[in-house]
Image (cartoon, rainbow, N blue to C red; front, side, top):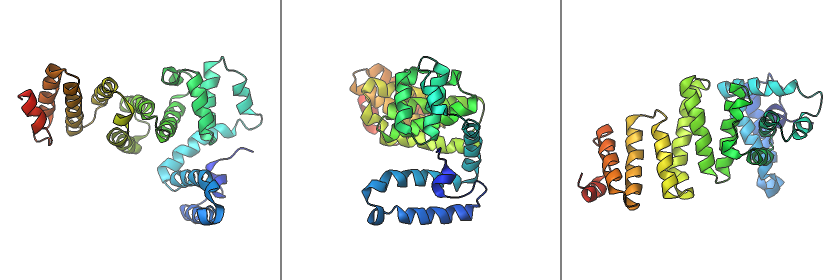
Length: 259
């Protein structure tokens, strides 16, 4: 039987926010480690994901729009139909999407990897909105698995498309915050110096505010200096200071570069 966020919480699709919150509290109590043990951790994670979406009016609307496209396909085994077409990239892109929205995240990632990972052009095979929803969820799952570089690259593509023609609208800021958090807390520890510089260059192409760009340029300059490219480091730190003259934590680097 196919699950959805509503069935996870045990509420109807037209449930009020109050009913959703009440259902979440009751389910969460049942899944508490003292009652259900550690084996309930995965169930609790899925319950929390359902609650976070359905308790937010805008995210719930977007989820309903995306999930409704699957309801039309339950008259036959859609997953099997897609899995039996491993050489059809369109079917494989839809399988990634299907698995993600049916809480089979590991299966979705496996299909994505088999089809080239970051080189798999899913945007060619999915409707624009489906692709954007799929990319966001896929990026979250990759980041959870300490694969932040792949998550970062997917979200960069998503932000480029969002800048071109908004879809998430009021949620764009949340995506930006998520990307900045990923870069600040996780990404650098997972990539080499060259890749880090490439990621900073990618950020500079995504239309963030000048103060953010200056901070990333400072990090680029520091990395390039350690790599021995003092000329490039000097050029970049000068540009960073032009964008944010009051940028902190630059004195040591400026002294070394004589900026």
